[in-house]
Length: 348
Image 1: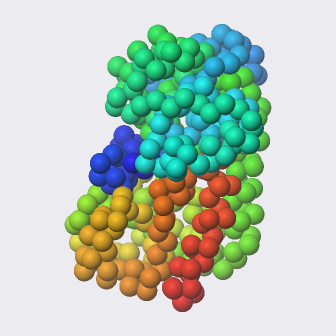
Image 2: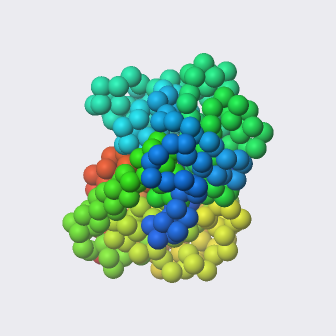
């Protein structure tokens, strides 16, 4: 399973796992917008009690949480970066490596000398019993697909912080702000977002040749389909933050409601003719062979030239699709060589 956008943001892109759901077509946005939404909290300053409003209810956190549980994506990484290794996290088998964990989470927790969090089933089949046994002080799920019914059960276990607006639609910097408030460290939110932006900007400086290149980030939900992620979607935002420019044609596609993407159909593949590079991913080898064998897909100029950036393993695809304090440094050094290779193929 990958990780994706609002459509149950884990539903579309993991076309990438026809068996699971698409990688939360992650809706990212600019810092300005994230600052505007300001984490959706009512009280700040790090003093408890803290009230955090969400679309599903208000979490009243009376004191500094010690036992943290996370659902969805990104909350685990941000909590760790703030010095709070969760006691329990939603499992994500599709993106995990041989350790059974997302590798950047395993590395960070191990490096900190902390105990690895217990993993439990999330998504549509949340293991409420496992969460209850963890005796959490707070449950963090600001970028998730938690339903009202699930939330009503979770809030009886511990104060639960859900998304401020729509499921799978919280901006990456907004999510950091929400979690920092919930953990009593609101002043650290901006430090984390600044660090992430600097890491991406510093990487972009090493590749000045990227600035004149356009790209489209596409996905499929099976043979005959074609979708394009929009400019503010997290995986696209990560690439553009490395210096490349989103092909202007992307702005002409109508968003598939709540997804930060547009299903344009394979018949419109020729509209991507001016994209210097194509970024994409596949759910598995079978999916890749099916998609790459389609004449209309193969006719896209960047595809013809081999100017394609394709994640070569599930952990990488997952990490490059979500922006948070642990994924960005983990991804950058792995991403640049892949992009460089595609740039050469493009003849740029």
